[in-house]
Length: 389
Image 1 (cartoon, rainbow, N blue to C red):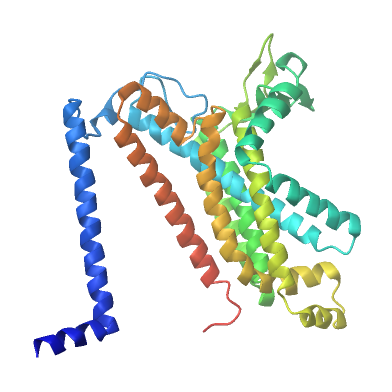
Image 2 (cartoon, rainbow, N blue to C red):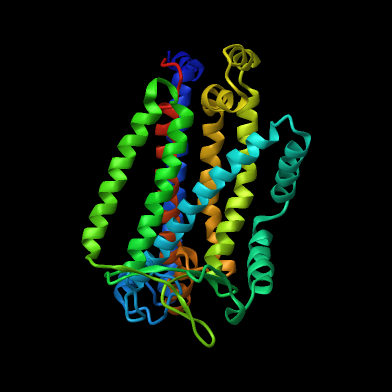
């Protein structure tokens, strides 16, 4: 009886799978316990202990770009928050720029014009096959630092903005507290507005959905902008940067590290978006295009109203992967000194020696950003289906 029951247990696929999962779970638990015990023993030998209390101590170093108030006497925790804000900034700007550029190049690659399609193909093959880290160095060291003029010979845009190897100097709003953070926020709102309008028009262009979405978004962002103006206080005026003997004063300086990293990320990741767009468009039934032509729709309207909305079902999944890759690749900022989360955390690690704690913070933050992006894209994918199941 006992032998027969054992044989019956192992012949049952469900019970066999449950036993395998329990065994694997116990093995993983014991492995983690072993790692924890070994880490605690090694820290004990070094007279150290796992603690995040150092985050409340004074940092003692400056950060070249801060979106929130920060001084050298601020805490390590605040320095990490500044680095996180810089990471989010370059990730959001990179996603918007790569999406616009990728969709443009992807549509160009499908053009019947031989020159246009070959230009798109050359762009994709060139930038996709050069390592991203090398592109970051080229944009920073060659294009910006070596090619752009010095501050004394900076290029000007009607006297309101200057471009040099020190970065891009643009006007700011004076007479308002925390004007830099407010202007960055307004810029992010404007970019998000444009991106959502474009995507909503591509995914749901029928039955006036684009008009309704655009109207609602316009009212929402106008309300946010009005609230920010009230918070900033009035009156305020536009303060253009002025050239001094060796640098600039006034205005807002967009540091060259941010420009180089943003260009490298957007140009590189746009190649993968372009290929996803091309694959999605080519998967649309040719009869859809022929039917649109029979109804008198031109090529542009056919692409915008017929082809792209159907192709989005195929484009969105690889688009999500590309966005996740862009967020994680933003950590390459440490190579050129852009003060993102990794660079800021590296400075703190060198000063405190808290390697495990800093690495844990890095892992948790990037995992959280990736999960949030995945959830948002999964929601967007679920709401972009043409047919409900």
